[in-house]
Amino acid sequence: MKRKDGFTLLEILVVMLIIGAFFFVAVPKFQDLTEVNLKSASRNLSATIKYLYNEAAFKKNIYRLAFDLENGEYWIETLQGNEYRASGDSVHKRRKLPTGVYFKDVITERSLGRNPLEDEKAFILFLPTGFVEPAVIHLYTESERYYTLATKPYTGGTKVYDEYVELLKR
Image 1 (spheres, one colour):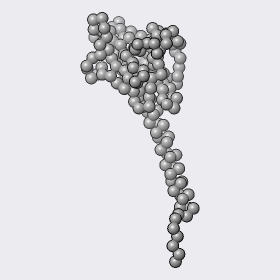
Image 2 (image 1 turned 30 degrees about the vertical axis):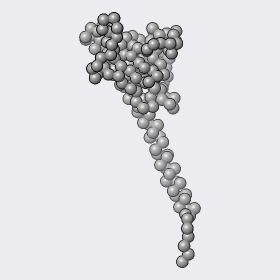
Image 3 (image 1 turned 135 degrees about the vertical axis):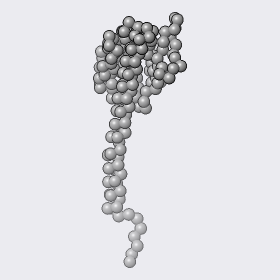
Image 4 (image 1 turned 90 degrees about the vertical axis):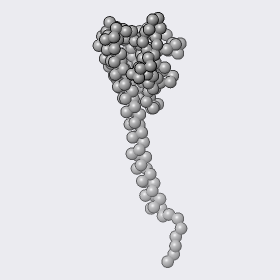
């Protein structure tokens, strides 16, 4: 009997078919994970906005939700005297956006007409009268998938759009 070294063309094709099937299944799952992270980020931001709206009205304090757009972080600050201070409380701690999700911008009526890069810090105000500053937060992924969050000033709710929407124009 003759001994053959190497693989037959059929064996190579079967291996290539298996690898192709793996990529066909695995790549969309990775994209779905980024989509899940985008939805998660929008839910967390919406919950934080509603929490701050209620907290400001209940405790009669002025709060702001501050953003570090470059590093993808946000946190809660309370007005104490004449300055805003971040609390050491675990509820108010600095939070980071999930992997693959970034801030495009945070637009408020106060920031209209200004270059977002000139702003020292983007933030949204929450007043003890039961009012949240009208604001629009744009989140995006590297695959250019956008979510838009818009605050509802008199209810503290957030309207979420699964696309880039210009509600407050610069």
